[in-house]
Length: 354
Ligand code: BGC
Image (tube, rainbow, N blue to C red; front, side):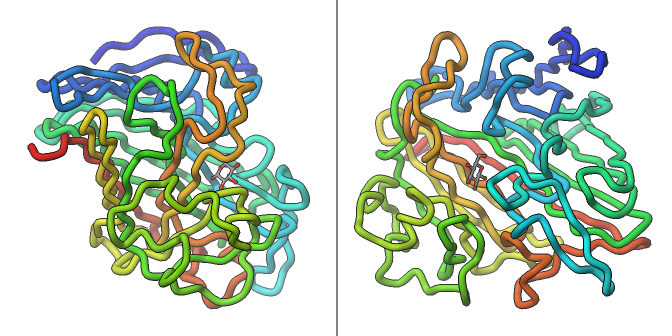
């Protein structure tokens, strides 16, 4: 594995880039700043490699402003209403960084810290073990959280994420990966023609601040029914309260077979028709946030001169459901001392018909 310098973080720590490769020529470049996947080169049906994730060329751009391009998100991925929750009878107040709400870990989430990185190679493939100790009180969260996330690039073109955490006081934990994909390559056009299949019968309806609104909803008869292959753009313009509230798709899908401890379940299949590229998502998590890049608006200048316009990338963030610390009916995100947080997600790449 190759390692090179990516510069210096605002705190003065050196930051590196690690290049993971496999025999099929797939390549992932990962930095220990925020665990960010900088680039991911996968073949199309003619064997042509392109970069299928959005991002920047320089560390300074990630530091200055990034909508979580490629990042490892925590301590809590997604929103916590008003940055408040009660745990064991005590109220906690978190940093608010998304209007009145807390989003993706706060002002300085796990996407903005420097992780310790240890490269490895084994019979599964080649990868990186990222570790970070989040101090008690960081962004308002209780407890020292010791986090270990392993990224593995396998011989059969999968990227595997294994998350592990322990704590010394009870705390909510919800870790995820926030890569923006554009399987056409190089983020040069919108993602509306990507054909997706999601294994979700229900989704979490949200209010205009993206906080859960009432009980889980059946996708039947809604623009959220992706149980059969459907283009992302097929219904995104429909006059629908939920699409209005999310400004497009920005919703948590409840995975049919998700959340059975240790059991990977197929969450999503994505096909980009012009290149034949396919991405499958398997996860142990109960939910997946589907975000159609609604806040991209052409102001961010990306890699190699790319300009990321509206909906030029999408994210499939496997995780627990939003605002779980305040939603007693949702699967719990509470981690207690002595227990272990474990989660696994696999992004597998192939081409259609192969
Ligand atoms: C959220 C979006 C947010 C985006 C980037 C997604 O996970 O659901 O609302 O704009 O992350 O911050």
